[in-house]
Image 1 (cartoon, rainbow, N blue to C red):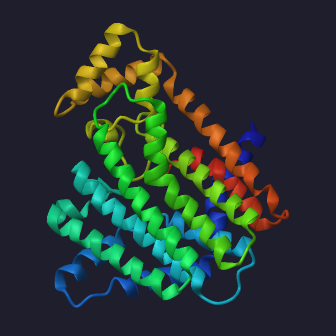
Image 2: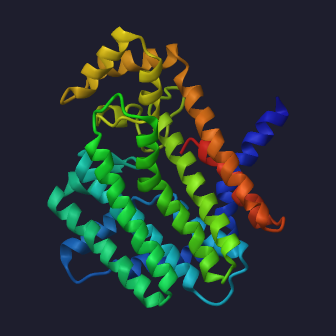
Image 3: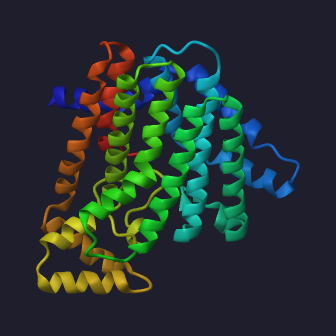
Amino acid sequence: MGTVIHLKNQINNSYFQLKDSVDNRLLLVEEKIKLKLSSDVELVKKMTAYHLHTGGKRLRALLTLGSAKLCKYSKGTRDINLAACVELIHSATLMHDDVIDNGAVRRGKKTLNKIWDNHSSVLIGDYLLSRCFEMMVEDGNLEVLKLLSSTSSKIAQGEILQLQHKGEVDMLEETYLKIISAKTAELFAASTKVGAILSDMDNKKKEALEFYGRNLGLTFQIADDTLDYNSELKLFGKKIGQDFYEGKVTLPIILLFQKANINEKEKLKDIFTKDARDENDLDYSLSLIKKYNIIKACYQKAQHYINLASNSLSVFNDCEERNILENLTSFSLSRNF
């Protein structure tokens, strides 16, 4: 038992190990973000200050910094600037997400659109993206510019694809993977590949880090979607059933629909085609998820992407940075925050 606990602690510590290994540079990323979000417009000041106060794991920035460190980057501050850039892309998409989903809470605090309004939130998201593109141009590397601009385009397409299939309880698993690949995994992939580009790595290592990031992103999103139905775990800042109440069809519901009998399928269709779902609907869905052992099935799917991500780093020499990134794949699945 002690060995199991020790292993779980080691996995959970990987996030903090990554954070500690680049802590001095992460502080500079925070400063860069604050500087870039400064404005003479009062509403912009208020909303960006509130956004910064809500914090976040800064996982994408950490991946850029960690990948650059793995690739022995030591030429200056481009890793800091581009880590700030990927975080701004992520933050902008969250603001737009909350408007689309009519989200009320994120990271345990009220969303921008609930404190101000949807119009302001969309425009602030646009402001963050415009700042981000300024930074990409300032960096001056065409490969970076092409990668991050293409990533922003794919994220937007992922959002539209998800909207197109909203409430579609019989959604194909393939469609779900396309959505989360575009919405989440593309930015993870870009974050890690940037570290290799900065360090002038060969194509093999660039592709390895891109592949690592993409599969880490898929694992991360599957875990996040599964936590929404896992009543045995509480994710900080996210209550159980949040996606459910918003009518989002994610992997647990897709796998449940595949296993459910005819009557259960009809009931699930009714639940997800309604304008709003209530607590009874959630309790019913959770009972079916337990009946068919869906949580375990979701984690088994995620394990496939963990293995792909971890194995892709074998092109790098064994070192502390590589070990931390490898352990991070399991953290994305076992985390509870």
